[in-house]
Image 1 (cartoon, helix red, strand yellow):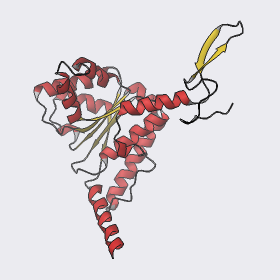
Image 2 (cartoon, one colour):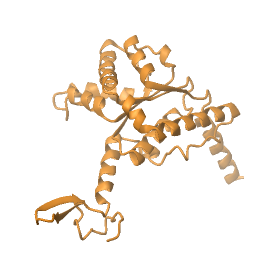
Image 3 (tube, rainbow, N blue to C red):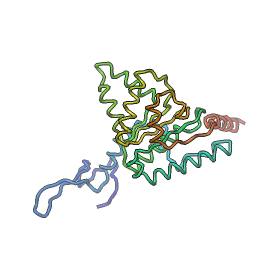
Image 4 (cartoon, rainbow, N blue to C red):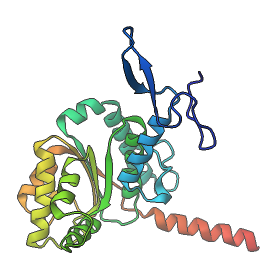
Length: 255
């Protein structure tokens, strides 16, 4: 039988699209096992992608196609190239990183410098190559989701949400520290971060401030410092560079 993933128009004759095949052992007892057609792996990957909530516009981003040439300053390109090297080293040593719960803290005061793209590229690598469960969310989304659970008619409780965030293999918190850390917000983030810290689970942060200057309290800062490799990003917005390229392209088109 060919060892490939069947398309939607084809149904594997062995598992009938379930991903599992029946077989008998030497004594004739019935058992099930994962079918070699690959549909089960495809289904699991689709589930992981759905759970990760990677924005549609970023699902094809990888470290190998992360553009450094879009940065206008040579210093910026060097910084990002070193960050890419660090990320690849981290992935090559991922089993060790998992044991230690070591993630990344990506920071720059400049918005649009590539931190989020970088973090999502890392997430896509993990989803495809490391078979991890990954959750991506901005800190504001997390806060709003917590608030939503206070409605008794919401689909799940605050406890269930916090447990999900605390237990996923890799949690990516984008734009961390962009919110005002009120007492209740600080306590929720401490609960999430501390639970992950205690269980050596990987967390990746992006932020506009160095962790030492975070407005969150020392309990949170210290845990992030201990469990993160900190990568500084350039003080250059690639959004501005992309915008310039768009305008140049338009000028050529209408010249």
